[in-house]
Image (cartoon, rainbow, N blue to C red; front, side, top):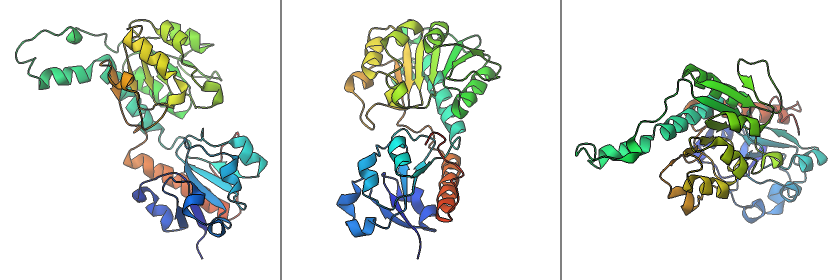
Length: 317
C-alpha cells in the first residue's frame, strides 16, 4: 500500500502527477482538510504537502495525530508555524534555491519593464499615438542601467542571482542582509542605509514576522522621486497602503510587483496606477523550476518514509 500524503494547498493536478505515481494523495483542493476527509481518513496521514505561503498552524497539525513531515513546494515556508511543528516533532522541508534563477529573471523583467516604462510604450504603439506623432510626457527619456544603483534586500540564493544579473547590466550593486558575505558588492549595515543609496530596491528577503511591512513609508521616502521598488519576495514585506500612497503622490517613480499582501486579490487603488508593472506571482513558474522543486519534494518525502532525515529540511525548524 502506498504511503499517504495530504495535499494541503490548492495545486494544479499536473503539478501533482509525479507525486501521485509514488504516493496516495489526499487532495483537499485548498479546502479545510476536515471538510473534505473524515477523521479516520486523516488519522493515518504522516506527511503533508503545502505551499509555503499557505497558513498552516497548530490547529491544522493537530488534525493529523501521526503527522511527521510538512513538505513545502517551493523555497518559502513563511506560512508554516515552525514552533508548533517543532513542539510536535514534525520535520519541515522545502526546496531551497530550486526556483532561484527563475525568480531572479522575473525580478529583472519587472525592473526593466518599470524603469523603461515598457507597458506605457506598448500602449503608445498600440493606440496609434506613435504613428500619429502624438507627444506623451510618459515617453520622455529614462535613466538606463549602466551606473544605476541597485539595492538588493536579502542575499540568499535569489538575491545573489539578482545581483549577478544586475552587475552584467553594468549597474552598481549594493545589498543589505542579516549576514555580510564575501561578495563583490557593497554591503550596507541597514535597510535604511541601502534605501538612501540605491535607486532601485530589489526585495528578495525571506518573509517572516520580522520582515512584516519592513518596507514602509520611511523606506519608500528614502528611495526618492526617482526610486523604484521591485518585490519578488512576499507581499507581506511591503506596507501596501504606504506603497500606494508613495506611487500616487509620486514620492517614488514606480514599482514592479510579482507578489501581494492578499493574493490573488490586489487593491483597486494599486492596479489603477500607471507606474506599476504587475505579474501574478509567477516568479518561480517555469518548467525547469517546477522540475527542480518537485525533485526536492520527492527527495524529502522519500527520505521521510524511509525513516531518514529530510535532505532539504528548513534549518530553523
